[in-house]
Amino acid sequence: MKKLISLVLCLTLVALMAVPSAFALDYKKNMTAKIGLIYGSEAKDSYNVLYDAGGMDFGWLDSNDNPIIVYESGVRFVAVANDKSYGLSGNALTSGSSIGAYHVQLDNTFPSQGAAYNEAAPLSGFVAYVEGAYRVRFGSYQTLSEANDAAAQYSAQSGRAASGAGGTSYGFSVVDLNEGRIIFELEQSGVGGFYLSPVNKGAKPVLKNGSTEYYGSFLMYRNSSGKLNLINVLPVQDYLKGVVPNEMSNAWPIEALKAQAVAARNYLYQNINKHKGDGFMVCDSTHCQVYGGTARAGKNSDAAVDQTDGMVLTYGGKLAELYYHASSGGYTENSENIWFAAVPYLTAVESPYEDLDNASYGRWSTTLTKEEVRAKLVAGGYTIGEIESFYVSQYTDAGNVYSVTATDTEGRSVTISKETARLKLSPYVHSQRFTITGGGSGSGSASPVYARSAQGSADISDKAFSASVISGSGEVSQMNKDTLSVKTSSGDQAINKAAGGSNADGTYTISGTGFGNNVGMSQEGAKGMALQGYTFDQILTHYFRGTKLDALS
Image (cartoon, rainbow, N blue to C red; front, side, top):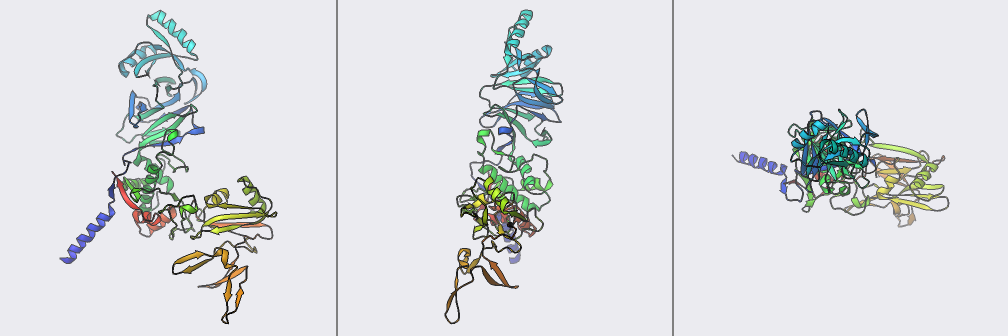
């Protein structure tokens, strides 16, 4: 009986440990995500949207991101555009005049979409929603003057009041690309974007822009230049299903994918205002985190997102700011040694299970001439002449690069520190974990020298080559300044001074491991830990020390 009680108690404890506690944050797990797909200088005047099942709702989002739907259409292939004149070439709007920006508009309003549509149909017109009312528009003209003339002629013939309308800076037009005509226009003051959503909300509909498919809806948000930013509006879970398989392979162990799902969820909530000025939360590129719609979604990655629904990492009662990278090369790094501020849970930890021999950029090396080194530095904005030496001038306690120094024949030097060292030397350098040597018969090695004590290890690279030794008779003498030897399990090993010496032909070899900024979770490391049997929460708390797994309400 004691054994049975113990077993039940043990299973109960395991179950409790596996379920994160509910956590009261300002964020809700069922929040709507707004993801920037095309924006800024790449924004356009129009976007094509395809919904194979047919049927789209049109409107806008209120200040709380609730949809305000004012028109329902049965079409399947449309272009949403700024209210301008366009040409039509195949299935694309172009510069031209076949679809004019101005129209004749009846002066009276209508109580519903249906009433307006019934009035518009005999006129070969369309419904417009203008300042809170349904209107009827017809005809296509290049100028407002032409539209007013046509309206006067229509009024004289029909006895109905009408005037020219359209072409506003805040208006939107919807063109049925199968029929080549406008089917709806929206003019509503204070509305910054046009919202388009599938009519069928229950069958997991997929919208398509170009060749990429997306869950959810689209928002065409007008930016400061008057162009339209294309934004995907969708539930957080569906967004994450488009992130996880773009950050990790679907073939990786599910515990690694689950760790990635939590990290990606944390990133979204932590950066919810990163692109606020652009009308969305985060973008779909490496500037934020890679999102590719439904293209790479699969059973494994979808399950990883579903099984971690609402789970986040917290530290000290607040949402943790999580970062991740492809591969640390063996050791991650303190945030202050890469960026600026120290963060207690973004600290250097060993990443022992990375398969560097098979990972992309697991191990890498490149050789540069003095001229190539100088050209790279000058291109990065530094002033330096003919290169005399090029070397790693400081390592962190974790063995990652803190700074790189180059000196020229005139005695000038340039030192690049932290992440800037990696970025300025890209694409030759892929992570913060590398060495610079002369290669072949060169005299330099960038390997750091550490002294280990009961309190830990310390980098003594700047002191080791000028150290002194005491003989058995008490005689003090200075060691060789250029070479040290250390005892290893395979015998004596020489360590050369980190002077970054070059070959006789003036080349330098940069060799390293890993890919990325080395801060936070190593994705290759997460994969390796999962293969070793670690669970996603163990993976996360290994890379983010002191954090806790919690659940959003």
